[in-house]
Image (tube, rainbow, N blue to C red; front, side):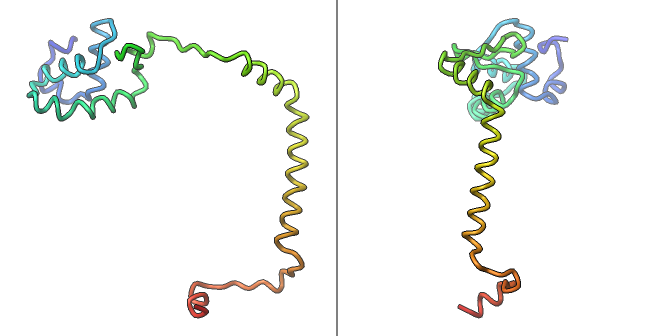
Length: 146
């Protein structure tokens, strides 16, 4: 059933983004934010003041909804109609290849170095402190000292 054929009571139960999805599907083309929201407002009998007050929130809801994609010409369309192409620089590709080739050796070196550094830091922090000399201090004890 087309949106234009639905009763206003049914339309009022729908979210703006659901209505947008149907509008874009019915029109089978990308549309800009004001055009889509104007159509929604006309269907819901909103005034110009309501249109102006709600269009910002409407735009935000479109940006958060993963069903839609904002195209370069500032028009919205259904994401399923568009593919995403990953573009990498030649430098990025070379860097990723060298990381993959040396990945295991690099991880082992980092692990060993990191563990050694952590041991050194613990020794430096604790020094000659004996665990029996440690004492638990409460907030009240700290307040009394001040």
